Amino acid sequence: MAASSSYCYSDTTYGITNNAALGGLSWGMGTVLPDATGPWVSLQIHGLTYRYKMVKDPETDAIVYVRNVDAVNGGYVFEEKDDWSGTPGGTIQKYFRFPYIDSARWGTGSIDLEGDGAIEDASVTYNYKMEVDEMKMKCSLSPLSDPACPGFQDALLNYLNSLESLNPDDPFYDEWIQANMSLNDEEGAQEQQEQAEEPEEELSNFEKELGGENSIGDLVDTDQQNRILAALAQVPKIESYYILDIPGGEYKDAVLLEDTVLPDNPRAMRNLASDATHRSIVRSQYDREQ
Image 1: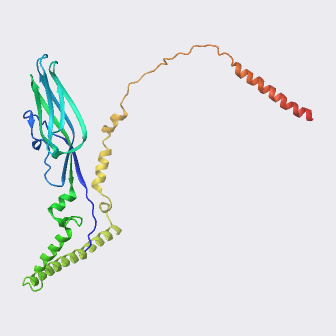
Image 2 (image 1 turned 30 degrees about the horizontal axis):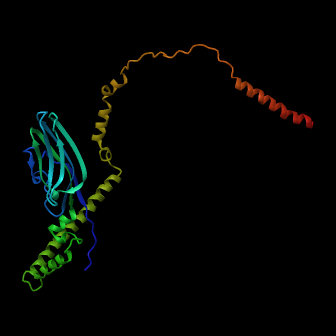
Image 3 (image 1 turned 90 degrees about the vertical axis):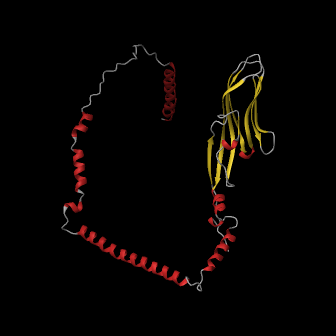
């Protein structure tokens, strides 16, 4: 048995999460990222933005770490260090963009403070891309959804084998055949009746249109014509555009050209003299021949 080929496509969504630090300075990514349940869903993180306010004495030391645990390889998949030692407090905001990283690696996130001070108004958001493989989703629901699904032939064979329970020896087989034949006969008779009625009505309308005794109401939509004439008769609505007076005036020239004497162009005079000499030389050739 041959199976036809098919193609798969994905539905891609780009988004930004809500503030992960809204409930505290430590959070789990399962409550931050969208649901990516199922082998047909791919969720990747490609950006992070954080902002917080540091409250401290300028003479004290303090270091803040913003990071996410690497749930697959250990360590941290993201870590940024802000050293506030010897500086006054303030608000800081940073943006990060990096290659797509699978969401499975993004473990618990946190903002950790080492030293004296306090962190207020913290905000951490993640940029993500979610892809849903439509083919994988269909195949996971049923291998019979598409011939390209893995296990399609086995599932089809099992389905065909399950149909063997309905055979001519089954006492309900004849009843099933008769019921389907009766249904098909009723549908066929109704369809033939509809086809037989439609041409007669259409022919009647066609003959009426070709007849010589048609009234004006048969040839023209009088209601529509009356609406058009009524719209054209509303002159006051159009007349206001014709009698509109647009204020204007005289715009005088702003540039004044003073009278002056234009000097002769010496170059042009030399060109004229050169042309006269040339014509004299050419003419002398003809005079010599004569």
